[in-house]
Image 1 (cartoon, rainbow, N blue to C red):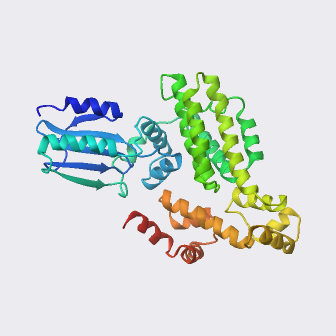
Image 2 (spheres, rainbow, N blue to C red):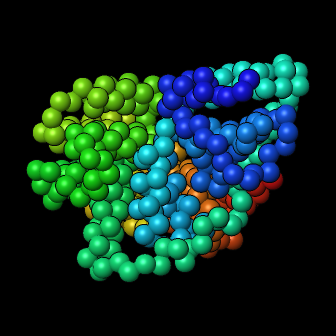
Image 3 (cartoon, rainbow, N blue to C red):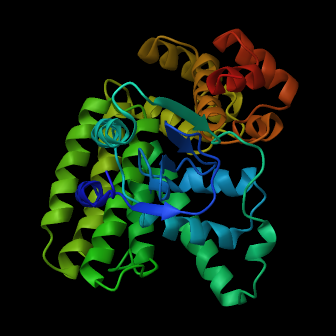
Length: 372
């Protein structure tokens, strides 16, 4: 086959770029699937006229926490997060690679014969160095711009924490503070104003779903709510419709978490559960919580155990370990920092508790997940 024009059209239908690139170490008669340190995927094929690349794309939406983790892992400044958000927003999302792989297999069959090529997988998503120097981000940024970025991230993190805790009162306060236009601080990344707002809502829908999942809501209910909002987002015909949808999404996800946490519990125990979820790093001892709620430790201990089937200490430790697992699996945060974030007094104690619950120390558990 003298050219690959036909396949270029197919890739366009899939939403994937198909480009000829320069020098690249791709073995002859092979299909290379490459995942870069940012978890972007590319397929590379050698042809007589050069190396062809399909991609980049992602297998799932990249969340804000993953972008923060990338910046932390590779010592990139805050400005890099903004650039990464813009980059990932522009990439297509393929949940499954099956259709793309089928097309690429047809390309290789045409080039090399049905049994004349091999498939190679290269994964750089766990490499310890970043291919872009952090010095490339050392540009002049005004204090006003930095303050705006920091404020937006602070508002997003506060919102997600409140949703995960099912804190309806906190959400009401936050929405009042944000005013009639809660998405006013979003960055315009598309010339189409309506499309820009829809993209923002798609990202918000994903983040809110993950926050509610952290609040222990079953995936079945999350999928129903998320799918419903996805249809509403695409069906929105005006900027006003989009603006009205965001606070509704925030409230509905928070209510979902709240119903899960309130099921079968007295008002006092619900307040305890909310306080634990609100800040795992604070003093959550029986004595401290009983004092804050103006009851005796003995009364609170007995009531909590009757309603939940476990002691308050067991529940708090379980929640702290669950959040630690989330940080271990989704970030490169050091064990000492994870211990502090989750309310453990020191890394040694955290490691002992983690091993007793999970069966491995935190670092070994992280390496096992990575296949190291």
